[in-house]
Image (tube, rainbow, N blue to C red; front, side):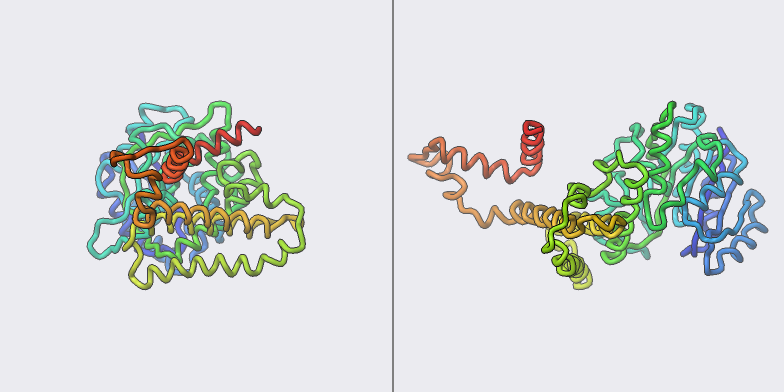
Length: 409
């Protein structure tokens, strides 16, 4: 099998780096490994840990740099690496078995071109002392706000949006000069430096395809509560605005819906005056979600998953708007759009969750229940019932609106 250089950027690591390296060696799966660890300006004892690790692991090379962010640290590590295949690994990701590295090595051996990246899987630890909260289950499950593994078929070929540097491998030759052509240092907050890099690779003449290898599984030792993930979403929104600034053509895929158009609208005096209250309202909505969690109620009702998704979308939009640098941008209109999306999300959630108990059968079926004696459904009443049926299925409403927009265009 091909040899792999494992590039690990680290900043104030939460756990002992020696434990991570030892676990990697225990699960090498017969693959020749080189570890390249870049200490990205840590303020704790990371450098001291690495000095001791170098005495134990003769396949470890490491360096310390001034803090440049994860992308810059990866570029340094990629340049230092000796092998033709680079596996970017988070410093809080631990392999669970011998398939972790072997799955990457085997696929790269079968597909030697540099147009192929191999994506491994990340899960929460199974340890009894690691509490997986409702929020954590949501963001890595059906919600998919952090990772979309729940929606990816095994060995599917994916596009640039799935370039997750927690566990992904590429050929070193994808960048001729990593300092110049690697991860951009334009991103100062969480997220999108990896996706932006993949987007550039995707648009090369030879392109890029990401192959999902679900046998490569690592546990992700990183706790999230509501407050922490809301901060992460605001930072991701900041980074999304930078991504769109660099590549305007991605706006329809990464920008919050309708927000870019709202930012370009002419500013009305009342829109500027509303901004302080809009921001207070957004913070109040986020506080409501935090109170649900701290009160021990998060996940106790079915609608909480939809509420999490709605508020996380709102925080992402807030971050996107906060990162806007154009002094002529209409921030008030943009916040209006973001709050309207939140309102629509919650209205739909409330209707779907509660309408069964709030709408009586005679309201749902004017003229009587189906099958009842004397039941009739004139055209007006039939259409009313049909509309009600469709509204309770959001995907039908979305499809209808899409066709309406297409017809108007």
